[in-house]
Length: 478
Image 1 (cartoon, rainbow, N blue to C red):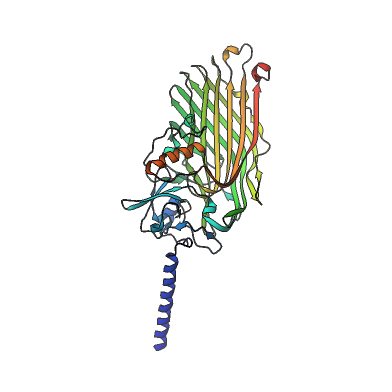
Image 2: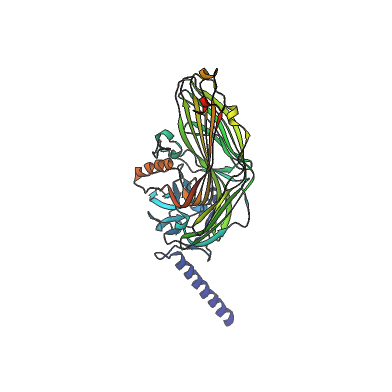
């Protein structure tokens, strides 16, 4: 009996010692970040708001990182603008949040704290984007193999104010554009197959992703202008893989590859009966995301989102233009980075499948033109709705179409297409300048910190630029 009692006392002493060590670990501060805390929420909360990080001895975090416990179970909502997270104020680590710190709650709720305040029974934390090297000081992260992008989860932000600004008011010139802040409800999550139409800045938009490609169908009807179009970056069995090595807060090696690119298809029609024009840039406020799972405890995801821009140039009240075309891209999109230098994997063998110039139609007494600007963003990292930090590769296609006046048809009816394809890639984050201006204008309303347009390392390449004029005669070339 004495031996059994002695064993019981020793076991109790050991249990108390372990408990005290765990409590001490959870209460560390000042010298560095605390360790990630296991989540309290279930898988449903984790799917909706992201998975929590887990401790791993092979990863060192930066001192400003504050881990908040509970994972998705500590999240009570996310505003429509995707900036303010409402969390449980009693979650472990929540009391250490302050402006300038970096909150790491889940793979989607991570960022620089711009504002933190009690709001009823919640803690409202406004986050800005953060470079991944500001979160992680040391670690090497890589997928085991290709990650299929065919069945992503769709995360819908609702109607954020930053999706409602006009390009002529600043997206192309650095201005903020017109906007109306919207106070919303937490974002919805649904399978990617439920790609319903969204009304954004007067444009009903139906995004698609990802088994056969990423793209969007959009339309507009207002002010005497009617536009309808579809842009698709065609893909076959899309997949992604990445490798990221960070040492001492510096990227030493990085690779991102998106496989399955097969083409680009554009269909567009526009008309006016009032001689008016429109110039819009529309960041589509939803993510198509594939959780990679925890790599050394870090819950990475591979995410695709998009931006559509439309600009008309009607010179008469009966202006109209219609066209459709398709190009073959073939191969992969991505990059490699090592020893301070970039190498790029880019679309090759860009060839015409169906000539968009041949298809241009638009009888009018004046010259008619339309520009379609499309961006597909692929990101592997942490964050939400375009404010994701990590590895990124962006494909930008800009197509300008022009048809001459029908009054010149007895001589020649001139048609032209200007196609430009660009790649932007790097490690960190990159946000369109007009979008940054819009967000910062809103943040100033409650004296919160501002966000920056870019962070980290990156590069932009023009991989294709061609002007096609038909007929190829002097009057059309000039």
